[in-house]
Length: 115
Ligand code: 5GP
Image 1: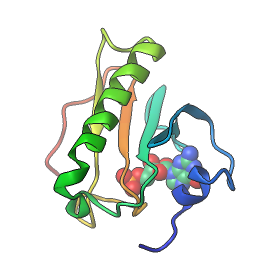
Image 2: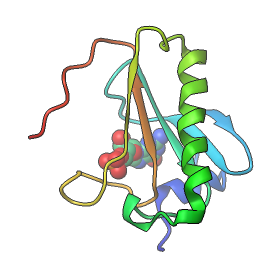
Image 3: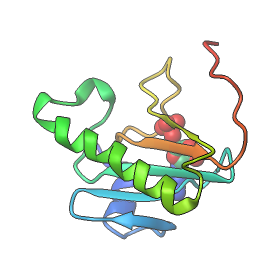
């Protein structure tokens, strides 16, 4: 997989507002937030898209969701609620080809649209 901007953030070669980091996952605030809370939860291993997730990475994907759960609690948005989104490829409007989970909240979101 070719290097993305997220590899540079993972390697601390590019600055980011990091809210969580461990051996497997890094989470940082989106540079162009769509809501008061907009955080990207990113596995450190390079997986390009959802299509590229391997069965043996199921635990890692679960950990991404649990990390989002913990961050949402820390941001004080757990009770009101939030949205977790993974965009995939062209029709999903994926821009950065390093898997990431969007955690979006802090305001009333509109219903998800199919269009
Ligand atoms: P995608 O469309 O691939 O699901 O989402 C990519 C997200 O990464 C976008 O919301 C975009 O604003 C964010 N993003 C792109 N480049 C950077 C960057 O250099 N730093 C941070 N923090 N976010 C970025």
